[in-house]
Image 1 (spheres, rainbow, N blue to C red):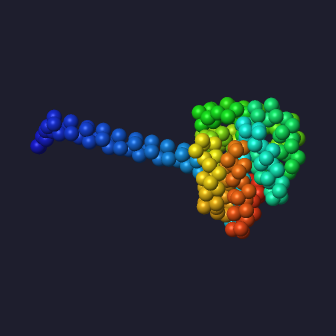
Image 2 (image 1 turned 180 degrees about the vertical axis):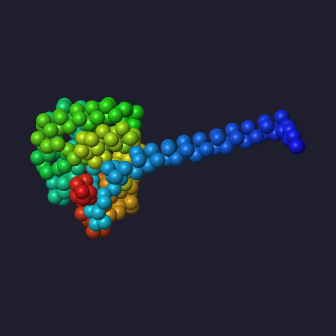
Image 3 (image 1 turned 90 degrees about the vertical axis):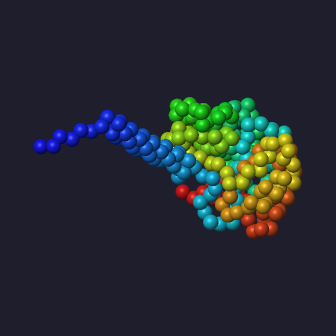
Length: 241
């Protein structure tokens, strides 16, 4: 009977190889888990970067937490062109501007939820996200008598808890496919017009804010889009349940 001896170096190499294979296996498993969570969070059917209809309709979404002096001029422009859009307001702003919110709503515009405070919702846990959305909803409902259907997280920042909280409260999360970037100091009327008109597409959602240069740009944007055959409307005009 032969007796086989395994060298010490061979045993060490075997365990090193085994350890490497184990590390690779764990890494693959971790990657799949993270990728799966990422898909669940950022490709969720309740998050809309654009509408889901293939028609020549473009939604305007105006987020409000400041800029009161430009809101009525915007409303007058929309009245002139017989256009109704979506205004997403923070609960804090709504609390301090009851009459202005009532005027926006009374002119036929859609009111969306922008959270209670304008903060980074991607850093909040589930309960904090839910509280921010719910507090804004209560104030908006008290003033308008209507519960919003759509939630636009401030700065477009959200995480899986934001998505879950919004869904549990029966909201669809609204992002955008065209950004005016009108909040930036170097955003002139001409730049805003170009950003919107050059990127126009069916079922687009255009993000804007109550800003001086936006007010200047709106008539030209509206007329340019109409010439291209687009109808301009609310978020609910480009999203079908």
